[in-house]
Length: 147
Image (tube, rainbow, N blue to C red):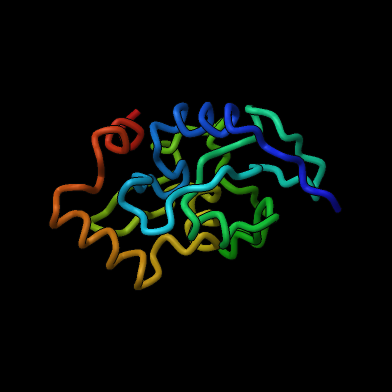
């Protein structure tokens, strides 16, 4: 399978629309060691187009954990549930910041948080460190958390 080239202009547009945040965990790009990447929300493998409305801004950890997946099993219901879609979903409808944990409050949020590893030890430690430095959540992230 070939991968479609994403122009620098489209990358800038995606980052700007995201306020330079990972649209999944809401960490600011400037606070990540590896930065953020443009993510196909629905991967090309599943027929997702390389167009602005199918692209998100994701930190390396969220993007790698998501891979080409589009969802997972929600074990409480036994149903397949799609992941959070930053183009069509509001973050505050599916997640809540509880201390240094990002908790899913819907099936979509729970599945996304689990598969993307929001609450792994390393991710919690990262948020705790940023919280001590008053860098998480950033103002832009706080807006999305209550939007």
